[in-house]
Image 1 (cartoon, helix red, strand yellow):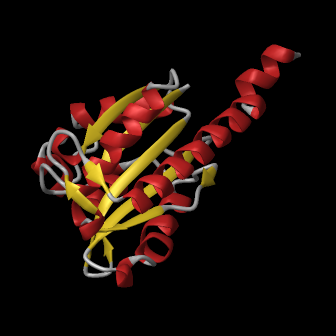
Image 2 (spheres, rainbow, N blue to C red):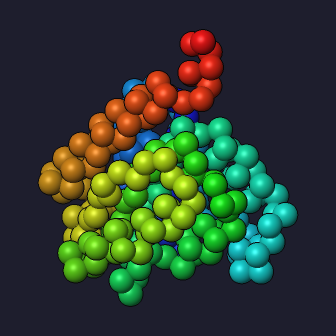
Image 3 (spheres, rainbow, N blue to C red):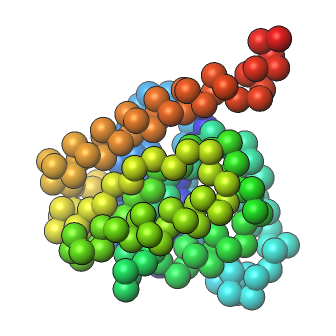
Length: 187
């Protein structure tokens, strides 16, 4: 299985990227290949001026086409996900997440931002034709006490994240059983 992680924070290091670090380590420990991406991998002018021919964007789209799943993490600002992430998602082809399991993650200052996953990010993921969008994980900033290098999460957050990763891997396994490639090879 092949998974792409996408960090949508305009800051580095960030709490939302720390969630992806832990997810990547956990998935790789189970033999899943993880390719990390960050909004910093893209030239800001390419994103702002919608350069669809950007080499980084084309490379990302190519790698995305070969992925089974995607984990997207973003900070929540003003009740929505980051503008940098939105700009990138706007440049993706209409069916970029077709046949993909997507796990959204987010961080924010308070639990009052929790619904931004459902009301802001998930509709965009749905518009990109995600096969299955899992229940996301929201973290209050105070639940991530160290996010540079070796992240440190509260026990409650770590438990929720690991439970979501278990669900994510089960969804990937389910999807691989019913993928067009798997079905045609079984015939």
